[in-house]
Every structure is written in C-alpha cells, then in structure tokens.
Amino acid sequence: MRSLCVLVLGEPPPRIRNARGGFGDLVRAVAQSAFPGPWVEVNVVQGGVPPHPSEVAGIIVSGSAASVTEREPWMQPAQRYLLSAIENATPVLGICFGHQLLATALGGQVRKNPRGREIGTVPLELVGSDPLLGEDAFFANMTHVDSVMEPPAGAQLLARTALESCAALRFADTAWGVQFHPEIDREVMTEYIDTRATVLEAEGMDVTRLRSAARDTPAAGNVIRRLAELASQKL
Image 1 (spheres, rainbow, N blue to C red):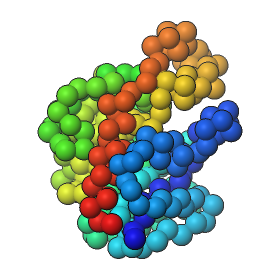
Image 2: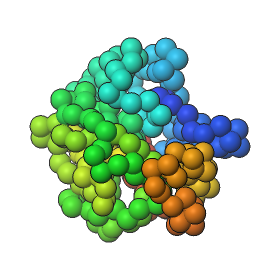
Image 3: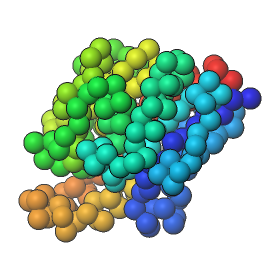
Image 4: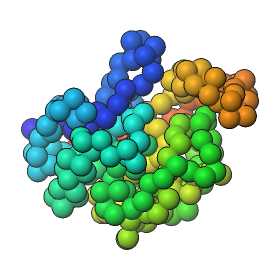
C-alpha cells in the first residue's frame, strides 16, 4: 500500500512543536480520515531521502522559516524530487515555502514581497475554478515574507489576497502550491504572531489587532483533505 508522504522542510514555533508536534502532525490532524493509508514523514533538511514518487500516493511539502532565495544545499535535491513527482503525475501540494520551492523548481521567481510581510488570518479571493480550492472564497492563515513574484510558465493562478498576488497556483495537472497554511488553526496562528511580536511591532503592525483577528480556517483545511482524497485514489 502506498503512503502519503510529507516532506518536512522546517518546524513550527517551539511551543507549538512541544504541544502539538511538527508540520507533519499538523497536516495529518487536518487530513483526518481523508487518506486511509499509511503516512510517512521525511525530513529533507536533515538529509532524509524520500521514496521515489512512483512509490507514494501523494506528497505534501511543508512550510519552513528558510528562504528559497538562500539556496541552501538541501533545496536543489528537493526541487529535483518534486520535478520527478510532477513527471510521474503524483499528486503534490506545496505549502508556503513548499509552494515557493515548487515554483522555483519549475522556473518561477521568488523574492521578498515589496508589499511587505503578510501574517494573520486574511480573506482569500478565488480567481480560478479548481477542485482543490473549491468555488467559495474563504479565510486563510498566512505568515511569510517571500512570495512567488513570477509564476513559472503554464502555471494557473487560483487565488490572491490584498498583499499576495500568487496565494495559490496550479503548476500541473496534479501539482498545486498555496502560500497560505491550511494546517494552521487559531492557536498556531496566535503563537506565530506572539513569537514574532517584536519584529511585527518594529514593522509598524498592530499585534493586538492581529491576535484578536486570528481564527480557525476550516475551509482552508479542505485543501489538505482534497489532496489526501486525490492521493487515496492511488493506493
């Protein structure tokens, strides 16, 4: 039986990590029963080697505090792996940093967003019909500085926010990226805001307002569940 593979490229803040686990745990908690098969986590940053894309039912690529623009040694092998997954038509979902990694692997450009940092619970505007995102606008939790500024050729724009022009992209028939975090709920979002409070205040943001506006985003979590359901067809 094929597994659903989570490529772990980073970790949430320490208090969340200690209380609720890493990104793989958060993703599985949202997926619930949408994928009935086994799960496997591979920490690429620590040198983990994931199964060949033909041997897994799907791949979810986690977020990270790293920047794609830094081009750390582990990033290039991860990009090659994702290109292989797309060639094998393995369902892939990139989350935040994973979204950016997919974009650069396919020839897109990622840079610091000139509109500034985006953090907190924000409304998402859908601009394209897609089975993974659905048809109705929803709120999503964001925390990022870099953005996909130039999507790769052939990518379909699916969603945007007030600060993010490429909030969701479909890169190929079975490959998507979302700049938002469908695995993050109100508790986790609030911890991100608290962890970065000093930096946010220095950038002129109202931390109290951000904290009070944070909320659960179950509709955003559907993105993970729909990817998991698609992967279950390859069991």
